[in-house]
Length: 353
Image 1 (cartoon, rainbow, N blue to C red):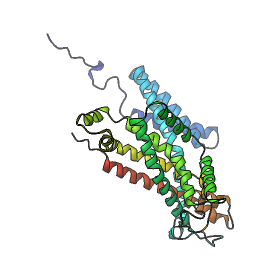
Image 2 (image 1 turned 120 degrees about the vertical axis):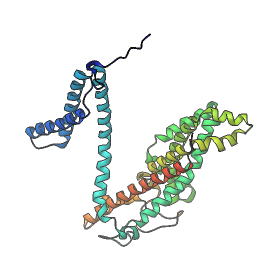
Image 3 (image 1 turned 90 degrees about the horizontal axis):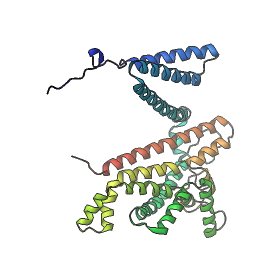
Image 4 (image 1 turned 30 degrees about the horizontal axis):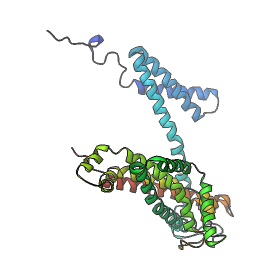
């Protein structure tokens, strides 16, 4: 019996396919045509030109692909275009915010900004060293509170939790995930007032408020990661006579450590920019306060709010400091993400073949 070789129509391997440069050519033509249409309609509008370019590109490429490659391949190209377009659209506000913050904040990001506080400063000059200290201390202590509590809760829910208690914990964690941040600040302030009396604002109170927001994020992310660890790993450990607690400690957690670290970094990024709870629980100050349990403590989010909302003379100096504080906060979040990735890579289980 002889094997039959099926050859594409036209005897070429590329028959029935668009050329390699066809999508790029269509894209350039679409942008050119959209720009001309926008100019004819009036003053040039970048947003309108981008929307017209996308619509013309999608229609022209779909028509060309349907004529050459068939409807199925044309539909695939159409959906791919929509997915890429949605991704680029999601990037626009991110790039816009980051670029605007960088342009407006870079000029004031000098040595004085990181060495001076706002004590006795009423106009130009000053810095945010007191807010930087406060942000690092309050966020760090909130992390020390939230990570052990969230990790142990997630272990219970994923490995031990059964029945009404586990369902109740899951319900309350879901409720805590959606509470407004100002409620967390009011809770911390009320708790400190009951213990220490009225007006008890401090860095510790701010950390309690942030931990209320951070714990449910750590619980949910860690629980999901523990649940996707293969049961075969647990069963192999049990078969060797290893107790359950040691299996969790030596097998389950190391397997999921990369994702757990990523979840913790996500939770830190969630709370480090909170303003409302810290305004209530940690208060405002223009000086460096290293006493974590007494007196108000400034943070970068409240520093940015204070500089922008209560501008003095000249107002430009206050706005510049606000932009510099926002840029510093973004840089801290980026540094935390890089550190988290390095830790996750260092402790991730090796998957060599």
